[in-house]
Length: 152
Image 1 (cartoon, one colour):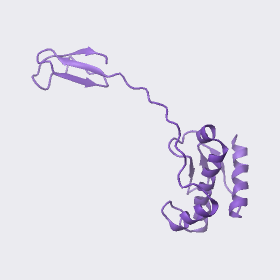
Image 2 (tube, rainbow, N blue to C red):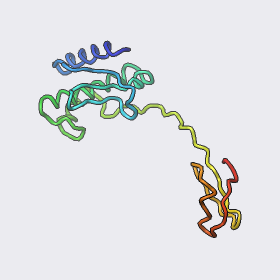
Image 3 (cartoon, rainbow, N blue to C red):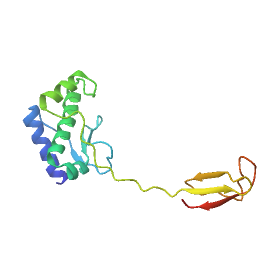
Image 4 (cartoon, one colour):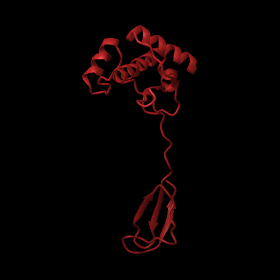
């Protein structure tokens, strides 16, 4: 699905569910990470996370659009458009829009290799994610020389 089809879908849902026109832009935004969609108060545009369409399909995306349209129409009408407002909660129920979207499947983050440094005098170990300059630093316990032991 591209931005033109998304715009048409948002306009159709707005007319059929809210009996009101959607007069602004709806676009996919690949930079969204933790949310399914976003309504911008200043421009009245709606951004949709394309990952939700890829992972969960059209039905989930329609739910996200309904949710964002609730924000849109209530804000334009000057009513309570925030998540905690009664007007917003009532409109969500009326149009059968989800309060929250299904979480995306998280990919495991690559673990940084931890470095293990050891004091040559007392044997105190130090675990670090970043390299340290062993010529400048000394052991905090005995002030002995520190050396790199393992790239754990």
